[in-house]
Amino acid sequence: MSNKTELIGLSKEELTAALTALGEKSFRAKQLWQWLYYFGAADFEQMTNLSKVLRQKLAENFTITRPKIVTEQISSDKTHKWLLEFADGQRVEMVYIPEEDRGAVCISTQVGCAVGCRFCHTGSQKLTRNLTAAEIVSQFMVARDSYGEWPSPTNETRYLSNIVVMGMGEPLHNMENVIKALNILTDGDGIAISRRRVTMSTSGIAPRIVEALQRTGVRLAVSLHAPNNKLRSQIMPINNVYSIDEVLSACQKYQSGDGSRYITFEYLLLDGINDSPECAHELIALMKKYGLRASFNLIPFNPWPGCVFQPSPNSRVKAFARELENAGFAAPVRVARGQDILAACGQLKSKKDIEDNKSEA
Ligand code: SAH
Ligand code: SF4
Image (tube, rainbow, N blue to C red; front, side, top):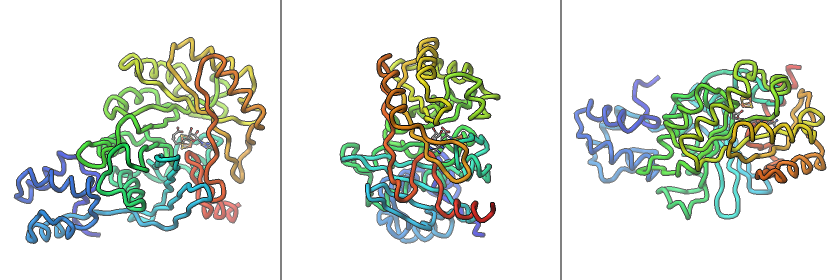
């Protein structure tokens, strides 16, 4: 193991401290930050406004690491999936979901997840470890490398315009690293993704919601998936720890700080479980009770081997959406993307994992 310090994932303050510890002036930190995050330099030799001597000194003391791309697939609808591997061999997936002239990169925050939602393939894998801030930031940097989006293009011209923290893992179970990473990704002197174009999805770790959003300024999505505690606890055991009331009260508190902020509630439609018109009515009543400015994202369930649930039939999904829309809520149904390469953001799974699971069974 090298004892060099990894630069990716250091905050601006930490980067400055690392350079001053080497006897360098603090403005060097600004230059370095720009090389790392604005120009996307992966090598000190590229940093041509630094002297050769300094470049050498940096290379002796620091590293700039990207995760290794194990496999990469592009689906017929242009959805792009990467299987990435970190230094210790742990792997996560990342997906880019392109729209017409922009698109969202879905990044992971943990290897596995301890929340254990019953419909989620990641949740069935238990938690292996948290990702570091470096590992979270460098995922997105790999996507930028692939699309040649360096130096940071302006907001209007970039294809990788949005980030959704909806890959593997529960971001609020790895809160400090996630906050640090999001603040690097949205820093205006570097990668500069607008905070409003970053959405963090949580299963509802209620006591951390407000703080995480205040410290990052990103948007909130909450995986609600059920309109009452009885049902939600059945499919999301975390509901026994943080009930719907605690989660929605935190949402209320978040909105009271900034009234313009809509919250997206993700709602996975599971056949015969949570997809009835009664469930839709209960959901509407819940939103009204808490006075939340909310929109919904109705998610078709992506089944995986060994899972007990089935996706709701289309007709019921549409009827559910209609109920919400009639009550004045936006309720788009998420379009399944990258089906031919098993790339569904939020339910990332590698074909290899499934094969491994099968062989274990
Ligand atoms: N842990 C966070 C973020 C990652 S999961 C969270 O739970 O919100 C992102 C989204 O994908 C969540 O809304 C999750 O409920 C959803 N999801 C999980 N398994 C899924 C599946 N099999 N099909 C479709 N969506 C799924
Ligand atoms: Fe974890 Fe989110 Fe999957 Fe639940 S849905 S197990 S919180 S990754």
